[in-house]
Length: 159
Image 1 (cartoon, rainbow, N blue to C red):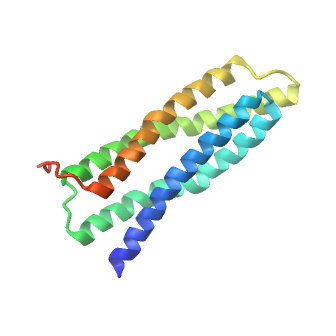
Image 2 (cartoon, rainbow, N blue to C red):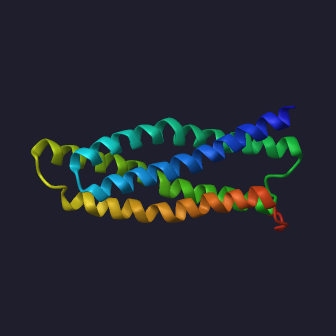
């Protein structure tokens, strides 16, 4: 029974990471396309909150449930596909942490433009396109981890 609970929690965490990531990307892109500082500021406020509530929670749950699952099943953490999953997870973190900062900064810039009745500054647009570009390797890494979890390919273990 413990195995199924861990597996369920691990899968829920994966779904939350993918769903929140895709949802945040969709809503930020749609808000950006309006060019409306008020709409962008409102969506960015929600996106930052969602990232802290959902993504951050899943970021913590995933490695805990992953390690416990591996131990429960008897997989050594040096198993090739697990090592590759961990490396991809670190790649995701390397892109996600700056993205959270960028989202907060885009929110602040949009709020300032809204308050001043001014257009969005160049800094906002530079941040948006950097944020947009950072999503591709992070999302690709998430999909890679999912594939590894499902297939568990026979990659030689390390050590």
